[in-house]
Length: 439
Image 1 (cartoon, rainbow, N blue to C red):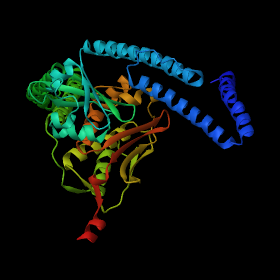
Image 2: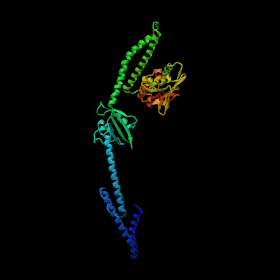
Image 3: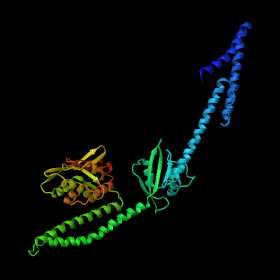
Image 4: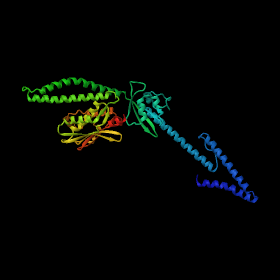
């Protein structure tokens, strides 16, 4: 309200106060005259306020009442604001309608979940894949409709960095891939896709690798045995050229056998269900045994130093853990420098336990680090051939650690060495002294 309107309103009041004051002074009834004027203005204000309130209670489509002064300007401002709000609501409705129509056409399901976990809206694909009903399920808790314990844990944990794979709640032949993003104040946007084809292809791949490896293992064993026999023959009738051919064939046969053994090991880790690991394994004796075996790969050229509490125990499957740790130590020995060292140490980082394998070898370029645990990924083809690697070792290590709730961390500086760290959660290790003190 501008100053001019205030002056007009004060002017109206003055037109009544000045005459009332003069009459009151002349008649010696000043209080009564002022009381009459104040009462009149109170009644006038109440009347205008009543009209304004009655208009506000009615539809916003009606124009404001014709009121004088500040009351009229107030009504006009409210009317204009109502018009702007109506236009904004129309625009927002159009935007929401456009958004919903766009989302409906997406090939994957979308569901909006509020901060309390209740469904606010879903498109037809999400309704079909999750077995929901529209509009009956709007406002219902999602976890009450998708009754799967694994999904409940994933949804409640609120760690959505990785997608969640699950079976359809109403069709065991359908596999779903769930991605969740958080927006606003705890609201969630759920994306669901039919993952059945990818799942089936992955299963076919696993079975093919497993079956092919089993089928190849038997003939390779026979070939390998005959080649070893031919190489061991010291018959003068066998020419040196043929002898070298037998030796090279035996090397390649052994490489193929190692590859098949790694494929079978990886297939077993992928297909066998994860079972609770409750066997206690003294870690230091295992590490010392692995260290002695690794030093024999290049006798006298590398020294493996073990630094671990003799009372420390890991909880897990001994064969799998020994295979993973041995793989890391053997790699450190193979790719270390002549006369160098490999350090195998157990460290604590807060509540986490870290088994660290560090070498002072040639190291790995930073660009290769994210890909090292991929199947058949090789930093240097010539180096892998020279050391007899299959490109599956670190993939096996990653899967073994996953089965033990652990992770693999890789750090390396080219030309200065590499560090491979197996990070175990508190429930996967314990100290024998602490265990004894609790008994």
